[in-house]
Length: 237
Image 1 (cartoon, rainbow, N blue to C red):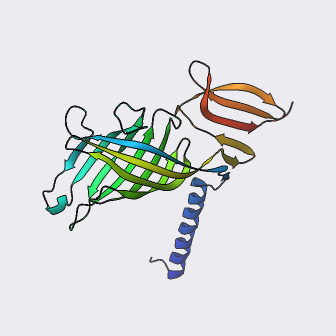
Image 2: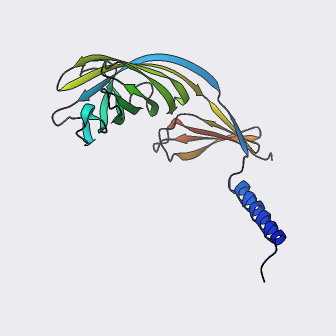
Image 3: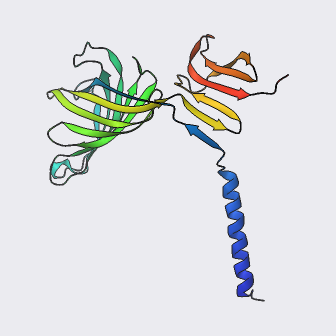
């Protein structure tokens, strides 16, 4: 027997109801967070790119052989230093890709990540994206960050310092707004997240203070490190 239009509509609404219930259970909205203190800083670092030899930092992975190299894709893993000289302090890497996106001129779309492995911003990253034309100078938007640069935004201004068939050096002026002491409130618990140098830290009990127990990530040697500090509410004895 064919089902009536009314019974079909009832089954449809029941199906939608159960799907919405399942979605609400799978993705509960049970927490809020505060961004903490806003900080605004400017600093300059230098991008060192090498084109030839064993230290080559850039490779072309797609070569379309079209005018203005349209459609070509390059991958780079370049050195980030505190100054324009080879002997200047090593700070980390600049990793990203270059997409040749124009059919009328030499233009690159450049998403990149500044990866700080040394210095003041160690274990932190900044992500930027923007357009680079034949002049070599550009402004790019900073769209995020990790570590020190939580919820970062701002701009990255580039200026070519030197260029040859072997090497390119570019100054990066970084203007960034970010937040520290991110605080997450969830069902009576407070979590303070800081820089984490280890994605799987060992947790050690530091002792009870009133009705709260404080735990802090430490290094394998037992020394406290920049890690995840968690404060949980516990029952009083």
